[in-house]
Image (tube, rainbow, N blue to C red):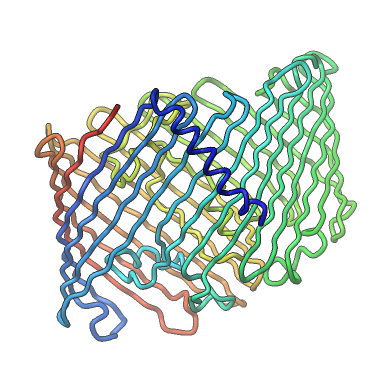
Amino acid sequence: MKRIEQFRPALIATLCAAVFSTAAVADVQITGSVNSSLVHQSLDSSDDTPGRYEDRDTLQISPTVVASYLSKKLNANVSATHLYQRFELDAGSRSDSFTEFNYNGTLSVIDSVFQIFAQGSQGYQSVRPGTYTSSDFLLNNQDLTKTTTHSIGAALAVARNDFVDANITGRYYQARSDASLTEDEQDPQNAGIDSNGTSATLTLNNGDWFRNAYWNASANYREIDRQDFGMFESLSANGQVGYNLYGDFGLVLTATHEEFETDGQLSGGFGLFSGQFQRFNTYGAGLNYRPAAGRFFTVTANKISTDGNDDGETFVGVSTQWQFSPRTSIAGDYGRRYYGDAGSFTFNYGTRAARASVSYQESTTTYSSLLFDFADAGTFVCPAGAVDIIDCFQPDTLDYELQPGEQTVQFSEVITEVTEQVVLRRQLSSTFGFQKRKLRVSFDARYIDTTYSENDRQQIQKVLGVNASLQAGARSNLYARAQYSIFDTELNGVDGESDNSVYTLGLRNQLSRGLSVNAEIRYLDSEDNRDISTPSFTINETRITLGLTYRMQSNRR
């Protein structure tokens, strides 16, 4: 990592040189907006701390700038928002401010062969995911922690030829936060998160020379230096070799390897895994039906080789990938990993008006890794910085390519706890989007089961979210949002629960091409008894907002 720090100036110089060399043929767009709002909050809470949850009026001013740069060699996007707000309370007034940003860019050094990429962000979230709905810029913002990330990497692709199709990707990243959780899960600590990591991924596939035979292999390596928990390393690899004996039917051999290493002894929920966490291998043979490279169904008999209790056991593994039509596809697998039965699943379906996706994923990871790796894309595409479905659209194709300044948005939030413990995370997600004439609807549902490595804790998140908008006139739109979440926690054998629901109804009117006004009412109902050492905490909030937004037109050349 020290070498990467030494070469950082050279990398920056290379990127700058590439930018200026292509500026003459670049497409540059700069847009922005300024939002001003008057907010009234009516609060009712079980916390009787004087002045903390009294009714208040707030003035918010929030400018946003979005810039994109597109040329033959470089594609880059930057967005930044600064929020200033002033509260009027019985005891007087106070003010605070927050700055958020996102950036990403890809430089094609050699077209379709070698690329350099970078991305980063700064944002705010509640330290504990169970209180995220009752902790935002207007309510309990002292519970928010600022998180900043930066990463740079490179990707090399060897075009498919007679023998091999290869892709190699490497990345270095940093993650920082002002606060995190202590091991007892009860109190924030000022040390926060300060992690550095490197990762590398290799994928290999057979070339065109192999007719009745096929093979593939992949490997993923990661090393994370965590401020409070020490080093964490992981290595996983898998491969298969197959041969068609009769038509599309054939034999297949498979193998997987998985190993992890972390400073200190495993404890908490991970103490059960013992030597299997450090080394877990499987070997198998079976039958495969494979009418095409992207369409197959495989069944194998497998044997486990590990230093743990499962050594020598056998199991049946299944994997499939099938493209039924240009609009419908599934992929999935079932087998064994160090923690027992394991699998993944993805289903995608789309028409011109509707889009649906269901996925199930399992991973051994950390908070900083999730900031870069976790992809939970929704069905709607929105401009950078957009928060309402009014500003978004649903593409009419499954393979839509994002344009500069666009991003795929999941409207209901996925909350990750701010801690650098190694966790085993299982997530089931589903999303449905519909767009027809004047109506847009998005529905999201998630179930996330997290087991922690450093203390005896398990957390289950259940989230439901609905977003909708209706064009009520030539210049007016009605919109509504609803989100319900439950966070169940078990710590050292003691249970806790947090229930949260938020409902929003609003109206936006477009006065002119760049000027709009909106009125919104929001109701929050939150009950939190996750802090087992104290009584449950409840809060109800009614929030009324009147806003004025001016959007500047694109400065494009």
